[in-house]
Image 1 (tube, rainbow, N blue to C red):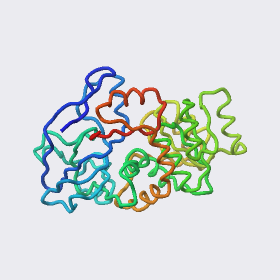
Image 2 (cartoon, helix red, strand yellow; image 1 turned 90 degrees about the horizontal axis):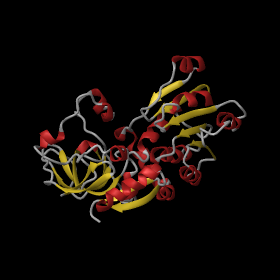
Image 3 (cartoon, rainbow, N blue to C red; image 1 turned 180 degrees about the vertical axis):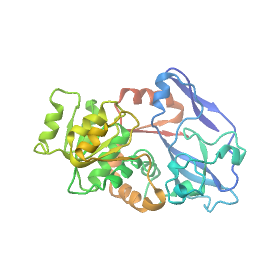
Image 4 (cartoon, helix red, strand yellow; image 1 turned 60 degrees about the vertical axis):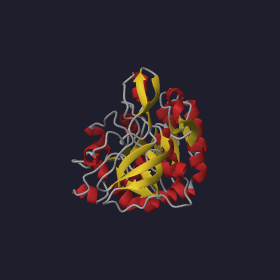
Length: 336
């Protein structure tokens, strides 16, 4: 099968590798669309890799002997792996499993964990079936396009009474605009990129700001009569972002940290009585129905969130576009 590979600084292309093998409860998934994500950082830096991608949607073409999935089922492939037996996995929080299985070892397979590829392997419990009324492209947004901020909104208990800041309007943050507005919240978007500020407005943000502009904090607070926003979702992955948000959230408000950069001081948290939560991925066992409903009801917005599509053979061109920031979610087609 064909996979993508980063071969040097801003260099990427296709490679030929053996098809994956499956065993136990693992399934072989033909990937029909592969959303692009943080792998662009490796492209910029020239970190050579043949294991790219952690998001996918496609169709099961073969099921292992202990799998409960029927070949032909359209699925979203959840990222990472899990042991399947610890309390976290049983509760649907597989992303936090401390002892995940080694899929390649279980299946004695040389390939299958990359998703910028024609096929991948995943356990049946980590495949989310897609109903016929949801397209493969829209379904693939259940990974990083919508997933982290879907969880953030749930953990923050966002409601229609809330004003919510989404900080960082890359593909993950733009998904946050969709999730928060789906719940009826008033959304304020923050980013330095004019293209993404405009796209956030198209997706439903009521106001947008460049947080680095002079007087930005005061202008944002003015949107709430100086009281502060109710909740904030941090996806910018910038060191200065979390403490900046702490200045904008009202006392007893909440902040969800999706990205892994920056920090909040104890004084920020305790002094303002803030509820701070970490939101990495979402619980597909408990909240699968709700996620599918977000996708169904926001089809037009997902068409705007997905701004570009490339055949996998043009992965370098796709990476170069991501580097400009002039895009929302970018999809690769492994079969084009």
